Length: 203
Image (tube, rainbow, N blue to C red; front, side):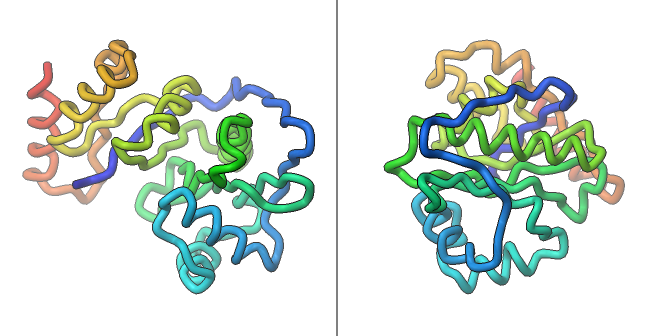
């Protein structure tokens, strides 16, 4: 089943989130690979070994140390998020690989990391940031909605799945916030038709 996609348009008013006592934010340093693998594993982000982190994160053409944010508690990495760029969507930035260790959740680190990634995306010249997420990540989706990310429909299964989330999260405004994702330049007629039917079926 395809992941859900969200989009935030306009990156001018990003909140400044104070960190809890003992926590700090920094960017990637050499040697963080093991800590990132641990964070990704705890957050079920499918990049759970040092080898995979080196291949898929550090080895990605868009990787730069300043695009990977690390939350620390007393000097130990406990959370991370990245301000990424997708090669096939050069006009937007992406929030990528947001995760926090279980024992440090509830400290608003996800909010702080997301805002850091948003600011970096803005500072790189973008006015839009997108992300991919899963239906079961309800706490993360609450955070994204609160920060102004809207559901972006590009699969015919998405409208119904967002309807289900609207009920689970008690956020009926999700329906009004759904938008169809613009067609990529090389998308086929049938690809555009499938996305349109998936969106229109809810209307």
